[in-house]
Image (cartoon, rainbow, N blue to C red; front, side, top):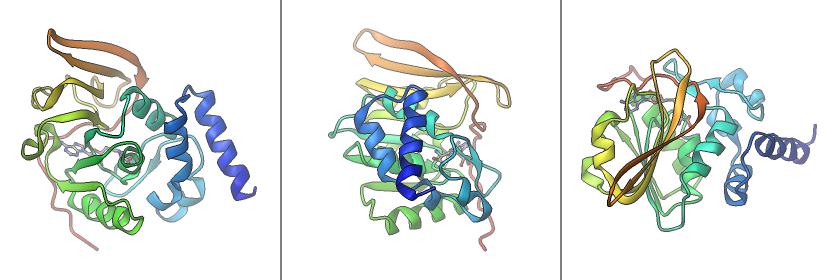
Length: 215
Ligand code: SAH
């Protein structure tokens, strides 16, 4: 299949799975997911499936990336926090739609790799931090939007605290290794609202950091 047809197919699959926001579709079409994968998995980049990355983690399914990004209702002025950088793909999508993206990864090896890659791709409005994202990123508060791409049992309180009033957080909640619920948390003057967006499956949010041996 020609590259152009592959892209058309990719966008068509996103649309069929409920990703309808034109800006999100454009951002995802403009980024080659292959860049965020390694070895034999690169040729499967355009498939709508999660795939393995290093440190036993996964790059999310493209339609889930699209649905989560869409649920954030991003605008150009947003300062966004992502927890779970992984390959850097989701951060790259966010960077196309927001002013500034901070992304936190607990595996040093993944943090380094994605930092180098995002730099190479010229996405200069992203800062990759090696740290424990379950505590958020206190030095950059508050955030207009927060996206968590690993599953916690409940929304971590530090993340709710670091969200600006009027802000939106999207995250999977539930037991790890089971089907989880995608939640949209909205913070208002009156309090916190929760809406369920559907079922998803993510790797668990794990406390603490890893200093992986580098190759
Ligand atoms: N958004 C990623 C996919 C995420 S997989 C992408 O686009 O590729 C989930 C990631 O969350 C993994 O890389 C895992 O190491 C990381 N993670 C899990 N718990 C974490 C924590 N407490 N702080 C930061 N990162 C965490």
